[in-house]
Each structure stands twice: as C-alpha cells, then as structure tokens.
Amino acid sequence: MAIKVRHPGEGFAAEVVGADPGRAEDFEAIHRAFLDHGVILIRDHPLSPDAQLHFSRRFGPLMGRRPSTPDKVLMPGEPEIVVLSNRVVNGENVGITDAGRYWHSDLCFEEEPNLGTIVHAIEVPPTGGDTLFADLEQACRTLPVTIKKRIEGKRAAHTFRKHYLEVMAEGSPRPPLTPKQLAALKETYHPIIRTHPETGRKTLFINPGHTTHIEDMDEAASRDLLHELFEHCLQPDFIYRHQWRVGDTVIWDNRRVMHNAEPYDMERYTRHMHRTCIHGDRPF
Image 1 (cartoon, rainbow, N blue to C red):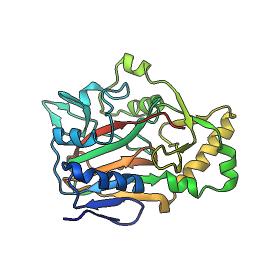
Image 2: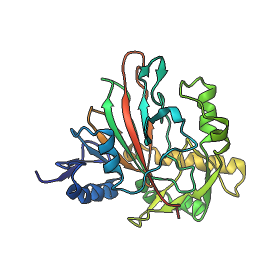
Image 3: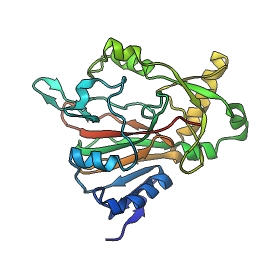
Image 4: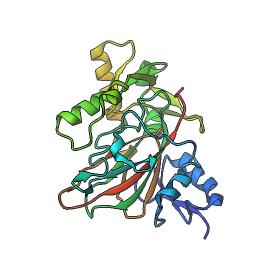
C-alpha cells in the first residue's frame, strides 16, 4: 500500500496512511510528514513498548528519567516510557492521571528541550480526553510587525516549578516529586522566536504553562506582552483537535507546537497511554 498524507479534519496536522512504524523503509515518509505538518497521526498499528521505543529512537536519542517526572509513572524496566493513565493497580495509580491539562510544550524548561513527543493510545474514553495542538509556526508567521519588533532577539524564562506547585496545591493525585527532584527544577531562558534546526523556519517558543517572564523587561510589561502573544497563538485558526482512538500513535514537534490535554470523566472511564520523548538541542 502506497503511503499517503492527508488531513484528518480542520487544522494543520496530518494523518500518514499506509505507513507502518515498524518498517524502517517507511520512516523517511513519516519523518518528512512530521517536519511538514508538526503533528502527525498513524492509526491502527498497535505498538508494544519495545516497538514504540524502537520506532521513537529513529527520530533521535530518547529522554529518560527527568527531574520533572516522578519515578512511579515510568514503565517498570523501561524508564524512557512515561505512563499517562488513571488506572489503579493494587490501590495505586500506575501513571500520571492529569498530565498536560494546560497549554505547554513538553520539557521546554530544560537546557536542551524535547524535540518531539510520541504518544500511543492503549485505552481511551468514549467522550472527552481530546488533545488540542496550536501551530506556533503559523502564529509566528502571522504575528503583527509591531509585536515582532518588540520580541526580536529577546529571551523568555521557562520553568516547571510554577505549574507543579499549582497543581499539587489544588490536590492533584499525581505522585509528588522528591525534594531532590524539586530542587533540580531551575529556570531556563530560550529565544522567544526560535529557528527550527531542521526546516530553518521561524517559530514562537513560548507557552502559558511554563513561560513565566521575558528577560530584562519590566514585570508588568512582560506579563502584558506574554498575554498578548498567548492570545495570538491560541486563535481557532491555529488549533488542531485530536480525538483519540485505540491504536492511535500521535507524533508532535515540540519545536513548533504547544498542546493541551482536555479532561474526561475519570470516575467512569479509563485513559491509558504510553509516552516517549525525543532529546532535542538548545534553541537558537
């Protein structure tokens, strides 16, 4: 079957039809679609943990245990797989129950942020639990000139600490970080407009979840400018909504998009997924 790339609905994302993540000869087409669209979907190819790891490593080295991730949500024996799940086994959650319910880019707060994320769906609820993606390349391309001039050459601060402390204060059921992990959550500065290292295209690199302020700018001015940028980025024309099905593998480029996982009825339904993250390089 020939590999085809098609749009599954409104938005910038694409479905790669006829591609098998397990076939080495299909990876070039998959990778091309990944760079072209920022978010791609491969359906109806169940992946074992080993198969997901093998496929993920085709994109680059994987990010294993991180200070921002509790050890309890790592797959036993496979620390490069994070379990996103509300399943309970022997009275304990096996994964992160409320992962990603805010606009963010995975691990943007590290010195060398995540290049891309791969999530494979094992079990999904019949309603709710969609994931929204915002195209920050298109947002950058359509940014008003007046705003672009204000942020050219500037850097913004990113940290996981703020979000973590907020959700834990609200009573999140996720396993807490250890004091050592919490101490490792430092503030990192990255360009607000970055250059994609593979395509050469410009993209915004900010998000409401982890971007706290603009370097060397008055606090109020920084807050107002970031708010203006976030409003621009989250226009409906820049958003793709993914409605999960069992067997879906969704791959997204964290250098180009931010995302937001919507809630669902965790008392009635189960959502169980495996996530791998690909190591990136320092934004420029």
